[in-house]
Length: 80
Image (cartoon, rainbow, N blue to C red; front, top):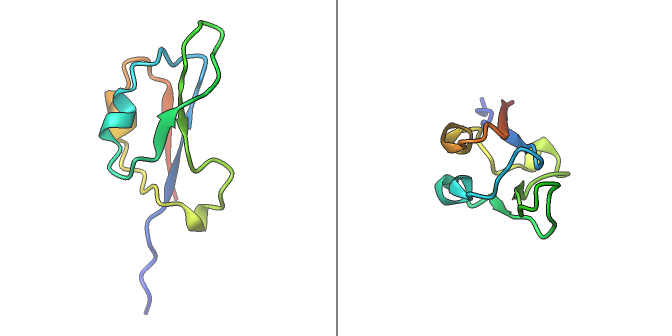
């Protein structure tokens, strides 16, 4: 019997992000980086690197460290 690997993903609300990048420092798999485009407030927001990839291929486990450390509440975590 094969065990199902835990998969997850996050959504970062770019307009809420003020670019502190604390989330990039705590992600154990380095799945969050700095966006190349500005948000409406003039910050380069964090971005999730697995966006657009099928959930079965995600490395993210939904540990929520990024969401816990985010002072702007800009990150939602989904576990599947």
